[in-house]
Image (cartoon, rainbow, N blue to C red; front, top):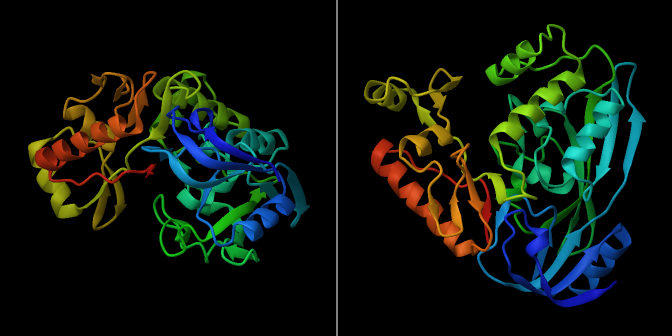
Length: 337
């Protein structure tokens, strides 16, 4: 177990924020993880995965365990389904592409989402009508206090919209080491209901899409709207799409007839946060090196040397304006640290 002092985290967070960790340990195996949890059982730990869903606003005065565990295993479940298990350090998009290459469906709509497999259940990542909870069987996690390994079923995780038990009830108490998914080997049921996917497939005259066709459409859409973190620092969607009551939606519709929406159920409507932010005039706006992306208002960006606090200030200004203009409270999707 190698321990590094005052380690720069700039290349370990997709915003590219320059902050430092008091201590840093790379966790490349479960044995190293168990050793670290034993040695540091009475210390403050910070668990780092792909660094894609967080905004670092200060140095980390704790020991960072950076999960880089690799490996993918497959187990036949039936003639139609397969269980694919990936270790926490696997890059999420590369894992999705691996499944597609094997002919397994279920994750194709989640292509190009930044981050690693281990952090995916925490956020219940989702895109284009699909969420992680739709295919996840279970995940294995080590309890930080005891070093004991537990298995959390799909039901145990209490998944919600960009939410799970790991973001609230047991936040900071477990380290996810691997995640298992139930994917289809045949009789694929593809979700192309989102208009953007339908339009992308139609533009290529694809009427009977394959798994790869859907994934390629999603990748094309995301690349056209979302900046590559390797080129410009960002963490994807910074805010959650707000869900409002039907009565509140109808009031908004009177004031803004062009407001886009998605029906959740008979009493609740989801409104795109990006549209709200754009209507408030923030799209493409910049404050030094912190700003709002010029193609997707839902994405806050670091143009080079912005601090986490500067980006946080931008987010708070946006929240304040959206509350005043629409009477909607925007919640952050990223973790503010």
